[in-house]
Image (tube, rainbow over all chains, first blue to last red; front, top):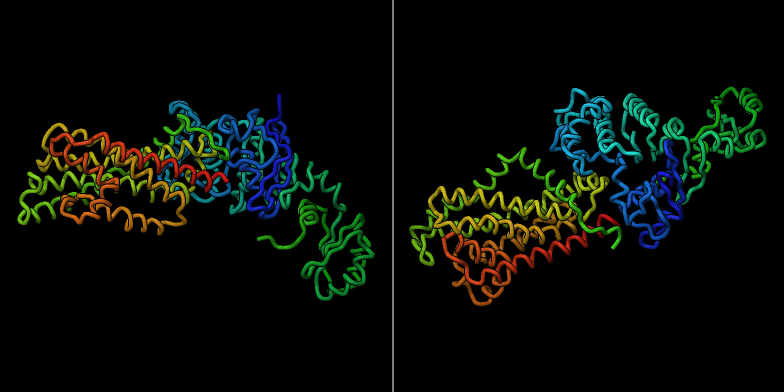
Length: 304
Length: 257
C-alpha cells in the first residue's frame, strides 16, 4: 500500500517569485504530521496543491493513491478539510450544514442523517442541531467545521491552523478531539504556528520557510539535533552590558533580542551563577523547545 | 488549463444547496419578485391605459405584462449571478468549502449558472400567475413562457457570471445594472414598441438579448406564435453560453491559480 500522501519536488511560482521551492513529503497511515512556518512561508499554497486546488509548476503529488491534480476529485473522496477561515453556511442550521456538506460527497441523505448524532456528539454539539450558525461561539464553530470534515469518514484530514483565534479551553477541547481521531487510525496533516500545538500533537513535523523545508523529524529529535538542551533567558537593568561581557563566553550560543538575552547552553549553572552576581538581573531557566528551534531556523525578523 | 476538470454530476448537490437556502427564505424572495412587477403593472398599466388604450392591437396593460415578465426574469438571474454568487464565492467562502469536497470549480460554476436560471423560472412563473390572476393571459401558449424564463435566465446569468468573476466588491455590479441592464429595460420594448425609436437605437436594441427575450415572451403571453422563434432562442442561448464559457475561464484564473 502506497503512503497516504506523497509529494516529490513540488514547486510553485507566482509572478516569477518562487512561493514553494521544492517540497517533499510522505505521510504514513495514522501519523500526525505538522507543517510549521512563519506567515508567507508557503504553507497554504502547499496545502492547496496537495488537495489539487492549484496545479504545481513541477513535481508529483499522490493523494490516497490518486495522482493530483489530474484525479484530485477521486483523491478528495476520503479526505476531510478544516480550512483556516470558517466557511460554514450561515443560512443553515448546524444539522443542515452537515447534511448539505455530505451531499457534496455523493452520500445519500438517509446515510448522512444516520451519522448526524455521532458527528454532533463528537463536536460536543448534541443539543445544537437546530441552532443557527450565528448563535455558536468561536470554539463551537471550529468543532462544527471539524465535524463537517468528518462527514465522509475520511482517512486523511487536513487542518489549516485549526486553533487560531480560540481561547485556551476551546483549544484543549479541540486537541483532545484530534487525539481521539489519531487513536481511531486517521492520518492528520496540520499547519500551525503554535509551537506548543505542534509539540503536543505531531509525530513528525517539517519547518518550512521561503518555500523550502529547513528541517524534518520528530519534535524532540529535532530539538536535540539542532539546539542546545538548556536555555537561560536573562533580563533586567544592565542586561546589555552583561551580555556583551559575559554571555558569549558562558554559552555555546547567545542572542540579545530587545531586552532579553537568550543563552543556549549544555549546562546552565555557569550562566545562572554569573547572573546571581548582578542583583539587577533576573533569569528564567528552561529546557529548549520547539520555539527555540523554529526561531533558530527561520530567524526573528517580523513577517507580514 | 490548470486543474481544469470537466463538470461532474456533483453539480446537482451544489444546485440543491442553493435551492435549500431559497426554500427557507422563499416567502420573502417571491414576494419581492412579485410585488415590484405588480406595481409596474398596476401603475403603468392602468395609469397609461387612459393615454394609450391599445398597443399593437391589445390592451396596454396586457402588452406591458408580456414585457414585464421578461424583464423580471432578466433581473432575477442577474441579481442571483452577481450579488448572491459573489457572496457565495467571496464573502461567505462557500465555494471554497465546497471545493474541498470532491467537487470541482467547473461543477460549482455550472451549478451557479443553472441555479440563477432556476431563479428566473421561479420569478417568471410567479409573475405569470399574477398576470393570469389579473385576467391578462390570453391562451395556453402563455405556459411556454415558463421554459422561456429558464432560457432567459441562462442567457443573463451566463453574462452576469463574467462580472462576478472579475468583481472586487459589490460596488462593481452597479456598472452592470446601470450601463447594461437598465438601458435594455428602456430600449428593448418592455414599456413600448421599439418601432417608434430612432433607427440607430433600433439597430442597437436588435442586438441586445432582452429584445430577443421579448420577441418570444410577449407573443407567447398574448396567445400568438412568435416569428423567427428559433433565431431569437439561438441568440439568447449564444449570449448565455458565451458568457458562461468566458466566466469559467475567468473563475479558473481567479480561484485555481
